[in-house]
Image 1 (cartoon, rainbow, N blue to C red):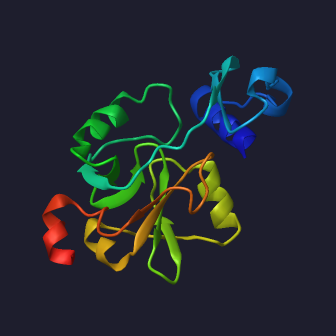
Image 2: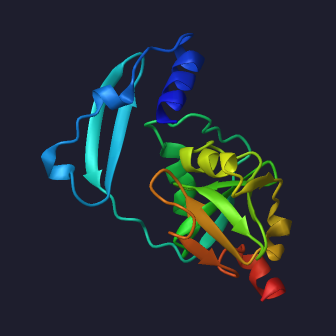
Image 3: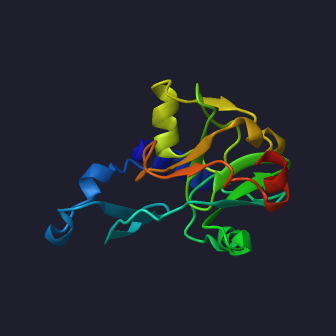
Length: 187
């Protein structure tokens, strides 16, 4: 799936995809062969850098809604400055839940999966169509839904997922994902 994303990005930005196979490019150094390791691949028309780092999931117990009407993160970019600006608006919360044009999208670093106690839903229009999200959709473990801030009251919790995080790894319980002005309404 990472190869597919690389090729899709190259087609969009350069008109054609290369024949890069990430498995042939990535040689994990011995210092990073134990534990949970994050591999970051930077590329344009070709791979420019490969970095490894130990991965420690962030503790997230609360989310703050932030809005931005034009944010575009269809492709993973090295420049995350707009996301960082939005993250700074989290107040005393651990992370953010980004709203674009009235619809819930993603957090600062993860796709969102909402749990109503019966089914799992991910926003129909995320900022980034992440790898884990695609896997869970393909396996029919989650389904897409249009989710607006006013819909949040029906959910018991929200999972943060990405290539390094699966369902259940980082979970925020209600009411800790409501905007401040809705806390009193739904508690």
